[in-house]
Length: 129
Image (cartoon, rainbow, N blue to C red; front, side, top):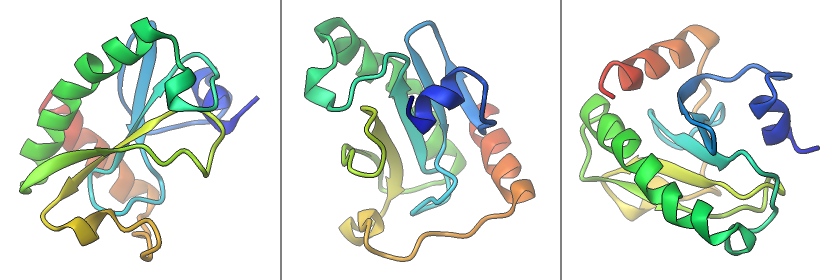
């Protein structure tokens, strides 16, 4: 069972942004930027293009209002969607507010946020959904 499956099952706490029967969106606790959010299908599949078609189609529709809320919470040029998938063997996408391509550099140092700061980021996004 992956760490994301444990988060979905409620075994590990997360800073949830949105949820439905197929997806969960929650803050990345090692974000590249304020507002960096993960969108995860509730089925455990390693690679994004192995996810069933109906999930892939619905992923963008689920992620869209979240991306818009992130953009309102953290004004930026755009919210980009990135699929890396190497760090956890559970398909997921990153929603990252960016102003420059360097804002998505996964090799760059991550932000270190306290639990209180993560709660503030979470609330700022949820309030704009």
